[in-house]
Length: 170
Length: 246
Image (cartoon, rainbow over all chains, first blue to last red; front, side, top):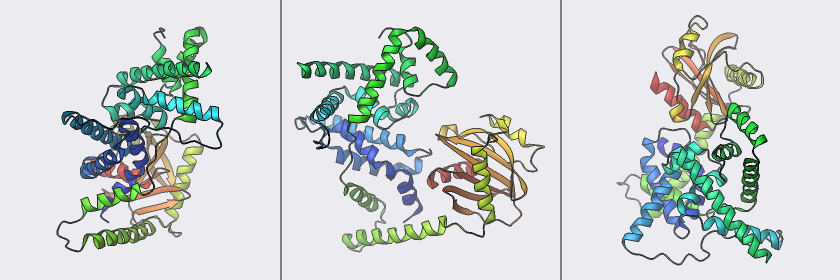
């Protein structure tokens, strides 16, 4: 195995789960294809990578692949499969109580319902524990925009979540 | 939420504020009920997400598929052997080679007192409060500081753009001799780069001592040794940066 490949395996491949998680939350149905496409692009572009932390760099590529595929689909007027419950829903956990499982389902539904740019900021912050600077790097948005998107994402999430809590209580 | 400091409260909850800014917002929180409510909401949401938000992981075989795709991508085009054997063989050879290289590079050499000594100096610098004599992210401050204190002029640069922020420098003693140390920060990691005049007694290479990674090389009549608890790949990135700079 050549040095380039080895470096790629050391620096980039450990972030495969992060790439997949982001792709699933963005793309739902064709996450596998998006991630594979992104990994190959990352490998081809790897000589140009000059950072220390490959995660934001890789996730930026994942995000680009997703939006490119989505716009190509839109141009060809391909209608994606109805989303339904394709996006993350919690598998029933026998250990968790019914209330817990219900709360989890409601929260994940609420995240899923967020507009793309809010959802991606929230996923990167809360699931990837990324700093504002890293989120800015992934999304190509200025830090101020990252902050306001996060604030908006959280207030929307809270509203819809609260609404569901009320409905559930009825 | 209408308080104009709402975004600062969010940044505080997200751990994005430095000590001074945190103190300022804590003072504000004490007097602003609206912002206290916001903080409570943000914390509640974080707890719920930590507990319930679903982290999506690929199927176990997905990684193998990606690796195979990369292998196809990187394989020399002129190889004529059947695709199946090429894939299987390259995988097996790759695994064997990776194991060999790992042994070669990371096997600690017990005779190398220098490596032990540097790892010990690194640890000392972390647990004591003598990490930095001159604290600055400006190499125009750190580099001249060494003049008159060390008998060498070590390479000093800031690589904040690449994720390695220059934190400062100090003088340390390794194996009974004076060494210049350049300190970098990378996320939560501290990297000490030791530098001393090459007297031919140390061979460059990589070591692992007590969980610390060491990577040493020679340039311009100096021996440099970077040590940290970062991943080996990250340490190599920093050493490449330093070498390129000088």
